[in-house]
Amino acid sequence: MFALQEIPLFSKLSSEHLVQLQSQMQIRHYQKESIVFYEGDESRYLHVLLDGSVKLYKTSPKGTQIHMHNFIAPEIIALFAAFEKIPFPATCEFLGEGSVGLIPLEKIYSCMQNVDFSISLVWALSHRMRLLANLLHKETIFTAEAKIADILLHNPSVFKRFKHNEIASILNLTPETLSRILGKFKKAQMISIDNHEVCIYDKDALLNVVETNKI
Image (cartoon, rainbow, N blue to C red):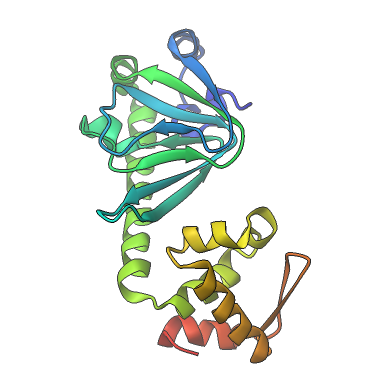
């Protein structure tokens, strides 16, 4: 389990501040598929992912999960909701066992007098904006082929860590669509996947799929 000082947002705080936050933090342990919070719940704490990994997703009116992002410890979850004092915009679910630290928001606000902490907070919020912009681009611009080519190029390790239906969920695709397009990539001799190990034979071809949105 990670400690607070190992998280960039808290790394510049004094020992006194860290001790105060640590003493106020409630640690909760979760099993796989446990829900940390639901979309629409009120936020009264800063959620700090200390161990494990979680996924954030929205739910469509038809009940379909729309994947937003995965976080791996150590990380802050739902940073915007905490500081904007708004309901959680998505549901947070553990992908395996893990732990979350809950810090009362008023304790976080007291740290904002520390210049280094405030700068780290601005950086963290900026990073979340980039994640959101990237998500919006992929969901509105990328075809299914481009989404899969992109994850093969930039995050092939997901094929080791997750099952195909979980990868499909991350990409907001059906498992059938994922399998069909991977089959196309294999047939075109762009990739192979053996025992969950991705081997890329034609990186330029995959880049072209991302750029042109088609095979």
